[in-house]
Image (tube, rainbow, N blue to C red):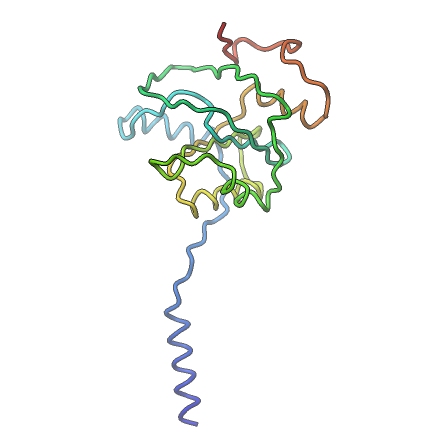
Length: 193
């Protein structure tokens, strides 16, 4: 009988001292709210200005239905920061074939295998773009868990650009895409000649 009590006390002590993995609450992320707070901190001088540009070496798009798409592009980095009042995303000639659909349940493994790693740092940076202002899909929460678990130091969450929206529409409808035939809104995209 004495051994049973000792065993119960030992097991209880062991269970009480187990380290619990900190869980991240799946709280919706509201892009416009976060941008307002970021601009406020920037104006107050509490944080350094962000690097210019809209795209990273690794980019994830979340569509209106919560589906995930991934694309990569060459990223050259930024030596200095020039903060424009209303910067426009540059035309990058993104193609529907560049977008790879990712199952939301496998996004962590996919990003771990396919994101570009910087030898001097653990990661370059990851851009998460969404067609909706409020992010609350399973895929988004899985991305946030991946960022936390892998200690990705630099990531940006933003709305999709006009080009990403157009290319995604062609990808999802499986229709031939020719960027020259699109009537681009030049107030929302910058073309370099």
